[in-house]
Amino acid sequence: MKGLIIKNAYWDAPELTHQTERVGAELNALGVETDIVRNGRFPSVTDGRAINRVGGYDFCVYLDKDKYASELLEKCGLRLFNSHKAIRACDDKMQTYIALTNVGIEFPLTLPGTLCYTAGAKVSESTLDEIESQLGYPVIIKTCYGSRGSGVYKADDRGKLRRIAQKLIGVPHLFQKYVECGGKDLRVIVVGGKVIGCMERAGNGDFRANIGRGGSGRVYEADGKLTALCERCAEVLGLDYCGVDVLVGGNGYEICEVNSNAFFEEFERVTGINVAGAYAGHILGVMEKRL
Image 1 (cartoon, helix red, strand yellow):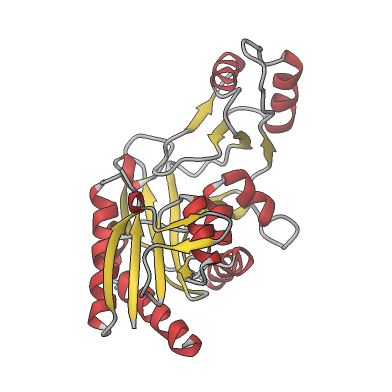
Image 2 (spheres, helix red, strand yellow):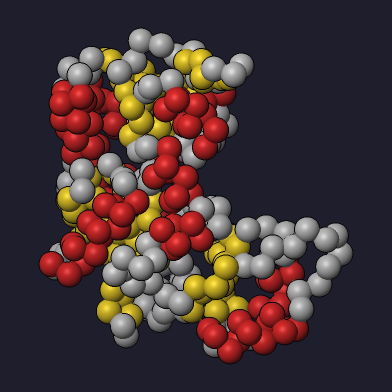
């Protein structure tokens, strides 16, 4: 069996390098010859037919968010971990919340941003009135695309809300009710539909607890309710692997985000859990049944 790991064409952050190398090493340890390539090699193209330019592989661990390449690779018949559909749903935060709607999963009240295609337009005061009325202050504003806490803002008053909304007027974004968590959240890793561990993250003086923004982690024991919630998210979104970010506030557990390519370096260090090994084992199990 032979596997391919695809990473972003340009981005070379240490956590991405760690992720690709760890998953590759664990697959190799299971006897699966594995190569790592960049998306910039154009692994799949189309001329009316889907053309696989990286033939000879049985599966692909797709550690990127380029939705065009992932969909073309699947049209070539390659099994992706995660699937194109799952990656696409998680990459767009608003799409994630929509997918998790009406299935018994709780998350903060969320308003989809009103997109604008008119140059020079101003955010209307009536829109700001509605946001205030629905969400109060502070309010969280997120771009729909972004990771490691980038594109996430907090407005404590109308002036700041207006400035951020104006800045994002032409960008897909959303508004969300703020949940007071003391600058902490939970990162739960799910592999093959099962929770394998949980870490509490604490922000470094920031309302965002992301490790990529200087946050730190510690082991957290997931109870049955948290486990069921995160496993349900993975099931609904069709994820082989994910990191579910959970807020713990006055209403209990609420989903913050679901990450299809969640980095796990700090998680492995803090918990001692071999995340890459669990993922590699899941991939091999799926492929052995498929081949």
